[in-house]
Image 1 (cartoon, rainbow, N blue to C red):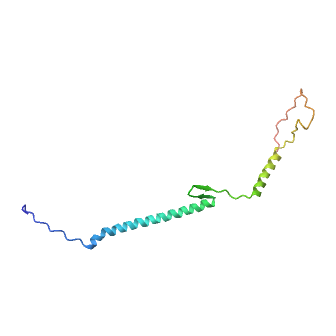
Image 2: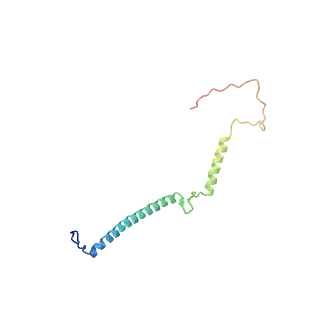
Image 3: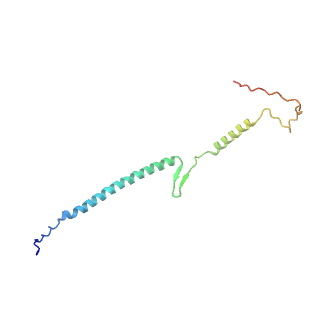
Length: 125
């Protein structure tokens, strides 16, 4: 005042609406983030459920302890039949038609001085 300045008038008081605008903006932004987060959560849950169902159809189950892999149910009878079938095939394929044991098929030993002629390789059609 003594320096030549006039005193400033105090600003007018803020209205109730201007006091509520920041609060409304805060609630709107929180609602938008909550909306986006909720829809992200729902889509992740749907994807997880779909993947879980797909894995369960392939006998893989996710538990709290980890992953459990199941084995498809096989009848004991069909398992034994297939095993016996393989054993019979192996037995039939393992017999040698020209094999003669020295223990039970006693035949005179082949002559030592005479070598057998080799048969040439021929392709049979």
